[in-house]
Image 1 (tube, one colour):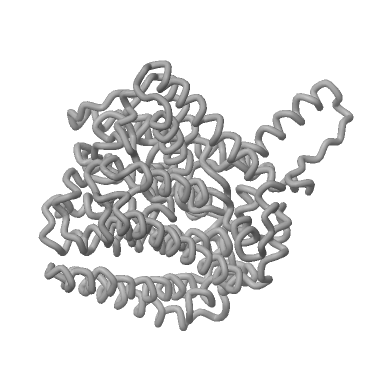
Image 2 (cartoon, helix red, strand yellow):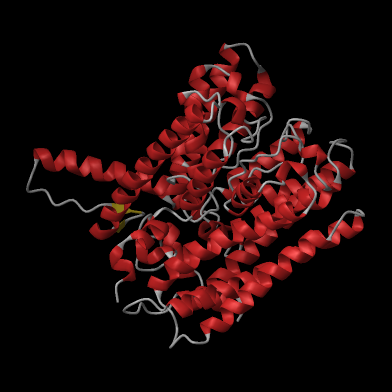
Length: 512
């Protein structure tokens, strides 16, 4: 079964009760295909004369488990439904993180030799978070370094299938559902079947990645950036398109030339747009698609406003001026709003207002239907309209006022689910920050309350960098194993849009 057929299989009709064998079988199919990705770092390791057996062993172990689960799935009475889909995506991302961490654990890389460190790094990769426990990136083998980047790229592509195949029935965010029953006229222009839509968006994702690689290779080849090697160009491109944030240098993208930073910033901004809109724009050749979309317009406006605020603060504080200030402001604003986490300077020391503005944008996120994390703009847009309606109905109780998005009425059930998501997201964020603060006190880790808040927000929102020692030029290594486990779970829950994981904890889900 191909990945596209697997995605379509999730899109089947919901069933009564849980087909556990079918869910585990589909999870196994995903793992079996995913295990083939280990061949890429294997080839790189051979080319650089580095140990390649950790990748082959990780692929063999994961593939063996996947095939075993696939055989178990043959006991399934039929096609699984959306109910099983929640279990499939939750298990797939969890086991993918374990798979990503295996090469770290099996290699002799001392920075990732502990099981929790390897799991944290693997989860950060496949959830496209970009938080790292590595303190010296330059000391990593090239093959290990590429595997970190590749895990993010695979995770970014996988989240597109999640948006297509499972999230529609949860109704938690508007148009990232890619389903015609929810708002979003661009969906009707895509292929009707889920697997066809997934294939087309995957091809767009791959094409944009290749264009970015080509642009960076050109910059390095013509001497515009002498620091940018072909390995750096490929590695950073693999981390940019999924809005991941793992870099190939200790100082993130700071050592690279301004032209490289501008190119990466442009593609970060582009990747933060709904991929269905990008499909219509670049494939269907409809240049007005993004302009007509309310979420895309708000995304652009917030990105511009945030950049202006940060720019004004940088100039006022006399930290940068002219074009340098524009580049610093736009790059860091885009990086944090899209949840990428790249940095071209240690912005923690910037004026308070600029740091607050960027942290605020971390909670907003980019567009639904993109590889970004966090709450996403469409939910904020819908919540604002719900509040506006409540205010008007307080004055005029008899007023009937449907909430509209792109001219189409949004179902009340969807609006309730959006509110539930936002409340749960905030609640999990607060619990995460509290656990980190408490554990830091117990384990004698120097962690201020703002640092705990930033670490919880950065991992739950799949942004990556926090503040303090976990800042843009730092590492999460000083945290205890318990805190690392908490943050890994925050990445997992945040990447899967909260509800697919939490629904597994309800008694009704497992009831026949």
